[in-house]
Length: 250
Image 1 (cartoon, helix red, strand yellow):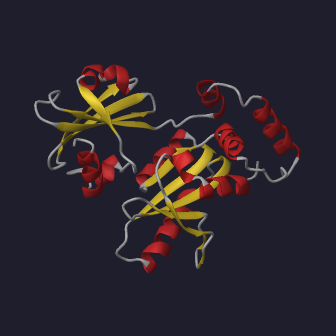
Image 2 (spheres, rainbow, N blue to C red; image 1 turned 120 degrees about the vertical axis):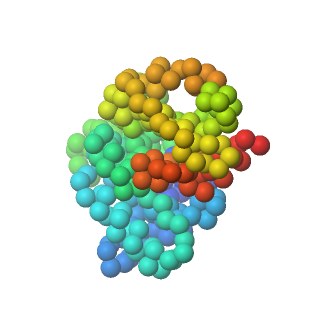
Image 3 (tube, rainbow, N blue to C red; image 1 turned 180 degrees about the vertical axis):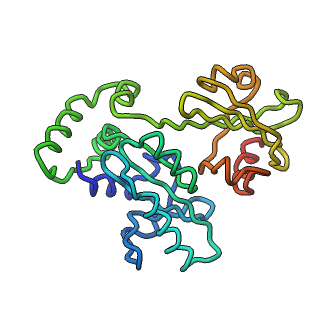
């Protein structure tokens, strides 16, 4: 499997990889700062720029995406632009660095690409070298492995997030944002009506265990684009995030 295969599959079948409907906008557009891999528009009209890397996400991807952000904002000054880095594996420190710059790090294993390719009947390019051939053959041979086993072997998202709606856990309706990172976890609380930040708590281990009582008294909700909690949510949830969460209360 080549990087071009990954790009082709993600371009043609974004919802199968990212679990949301996306409208293709531009692919490999030329600019003064290079060529962005893929640009989509999401269901509320925001741009999503995706940079794809085979194997481990390399140093420099953050700078590439920041440049592509500038490329789009120069042309579409009043439009919202979101950024995403996709790779087969993303080291924890690099994932945290991505989040610092409002870039969503998304790990998608080679097995996942192979599974979807088989599902849609996609024919791969010839691998570039013997190592690629051996790796692809090995993955195809073991394509029946369970998702849990394959993810443990190929790597999973190490920065994990979850959102819940609580009606009573904190004395008022509130959205709870949980994060696992570097063996620790946190819970941030936002007012369910106006999105104002109400406080946070830190703990060791996994948020599911550390904040079990809060989770059991809440219901899960989804966020299409994870905001940077440190930068974008210091005082209040962004209006687009709050609107998306509110729609799930109805």
